[in-house]
Length: 393
Image (cartoon, rainbow, N blue to C red; front, side, top):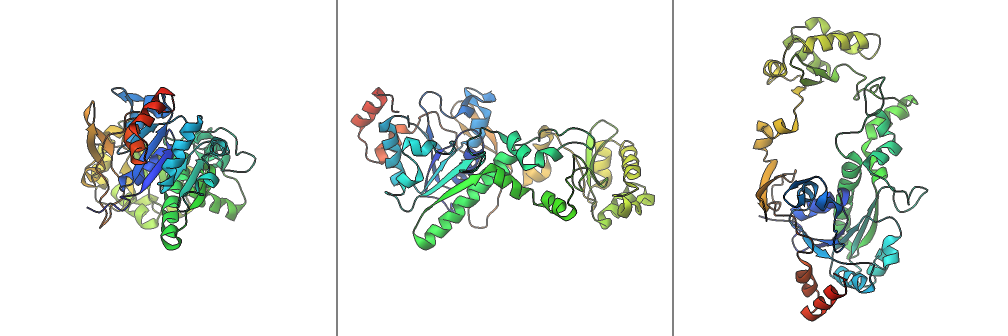
């Protein structure tokens, strides 16, 4: 039951989604993640999408197995407490606007004097420098600036928001987690920590490799629904079935397309594959729309079961919970919650041969571990009571 990050202390100054998902992955691998939250309010997601008694569902999903302390960083005593904590930490992750941590006296330049092994990751929308560095933003804004937001929609229609927060997660959380692990590896070789600047906009551009590859090769900026994998190729699309549900077809390669056409009883469509991106695109799309309307989603699923056609039903979230493959993979697990008993969560997604991720424990109550953590770095109970009286914690 190896957990690769056991013994590692991570100070988490982030809120909402990008930072907390990054630190959740570190926590799942055994790291001690300490959320530093403002007294009284804490992480905004504590009350966001409230679905579990007294807890925001977003907070519960993103903060399992973490510890929480309250700390007023605007007070000198609060900043001093954080600096002491950082002296024994391995990683600090923050998501304030550039310059804020330096004004508070808890920036990397201050902290590395007492802890040369510290890895300090700043996760922001636009990075630490550049014309946009101080701008506020959310996922939809980073998608817009990346150009990817202009491509998310049907051909001839306006762009629409994505169903997930791609910039936050793919451009932010995952990039930050990867960067921290790379820095940890380098530290194991050199003994030195370092500073990491993660921009969600930069990360999103990297995620859009295929989009930019096509643009670089043609010199033409595409619109919604026109690229090969965004609706411009009929063999790669989503079609409505007879019962008003939907089926996804991804038969890009000729062998998959041939299998689909034969199983669907339309071998006459096989030859349209090669010319489907040109003059026959509209014709083929019309044929496929009519074809999928002839059967229900369940009938298409039964017809194509076990066939290499890259075709699949479009499931709703409640149907995903019952999917036999995801059940087999153990992607939904339950963990304890102080009020609700057992709460369902999405499991750590990677399977290792010699690492066992933590079982999902509860997300912490606001400030639940304040005294425990402060005692661990040398503060006395008398000092802690004084901090409480002064509003530092």
